Length: 313
Picture 1: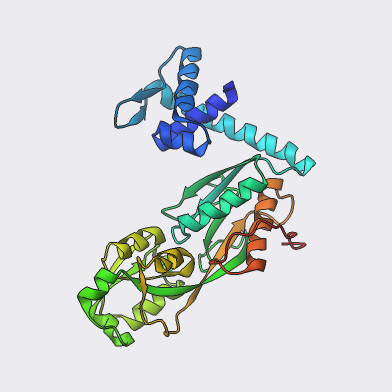
Picture 2: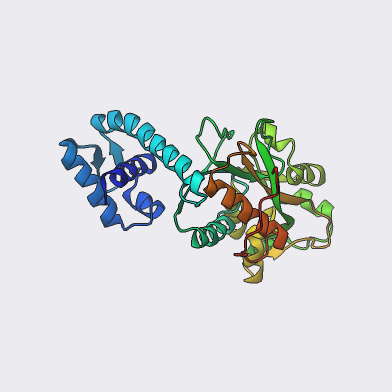
């Protein structure tokens, strides 16, 4: 692994606190990741990381080095992105901020199909646990629900929609008895999304639950995947996008509750900084998401065809 890649590996290990995690993100083996950082430490004649069987932490030298190297690597990536933009070849790092409402399983499939088409692009996915700022986080784009309150300075496109479903495990349903009408929800445990007050007030699923099960016990989490896991563990009834729970329903791990009820839909949006001068990797990703929208909903199989990005979008 060359020197620049060793620097990138060191930054990734420091950010994740794990050689295994960094290796996975950079598509190399753990052994390669370990050797890469070791060669960097040998070159600098300084220990950058303190390794134990349970954790990886920065030494004082590592903290000083990381502060400078992270900015240098980011600048190099920016320069490379600018040069590649002139050639129109999607390549380089695609840094994505992702809201907790976006299902990890669906996103992994989508990114797998995208990188199969554009193998020179290296996605970096950061699940946000607070407000998303493209500028402060140095993100190329953000994937969020369609209700997320982005600032007016960014471009936001809804690229797919999914119907929500009330779901629970067979074990939980067996323990609570028959559920025949909405009023029955008030005596049960509801699993619902919580993503801060500013987003919650715009969340149609949250509003539906608050209106239709106001007296239920509400367990909240800021991750749709966590809510899904809670439902699988028999902790209550979750209102989740079909894109997240379709496979669980097909496999009978979860069952749909009150299937005839009119429930809100949810959308997947992409936000990016400018309509003009998009880097090729960002433009290709927006095109790819638009292709999914043109094909079907979030529950459809990932499509590998591209459609052109709309003029001015």
